[in-house]
Image (cartoon, rainbow, N blue to C red; front, side, top):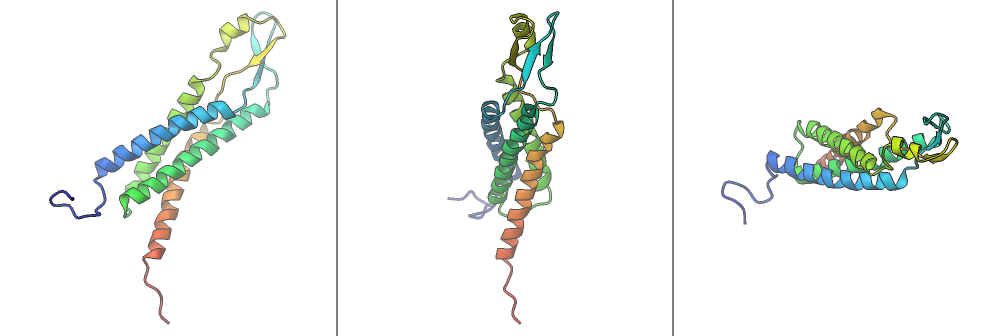
Length: 176
């Protein structure tokens, strides 16, 4: 049954799109943050004389791997949101990519916050508990903040690709 003044199969209102897309992005972002925490390797930290700490290897591959996992996971979130928006909206509107980019950027930020909050915690108290030369795992962190744009970029590209595919399907066949 449809509401009065609304055709069956009509696209949802902009407010409904924003809410549904926001909830979907938040759920996926929390899941991505949990996965990032589980899959990304942590760098080793060595305790120095005098109680300080230093990364065991300043160019530790764990830094690059953590950023790579973040880009991969938030890219998947972006693609899912882009496809979901295209399926929910039914027809493209010029403000959809802007909405999608904003929601995906918020989702990437939430992924970052969840992943880092689950980390091993601040180094200070843990460093004090070890002797000089001891090694412990450093915190999970995103070293390249440009990785935050992976989700918006992937989302907008997925939205554009699904829009292009849908427009090709509805184009009349050429007669020649």
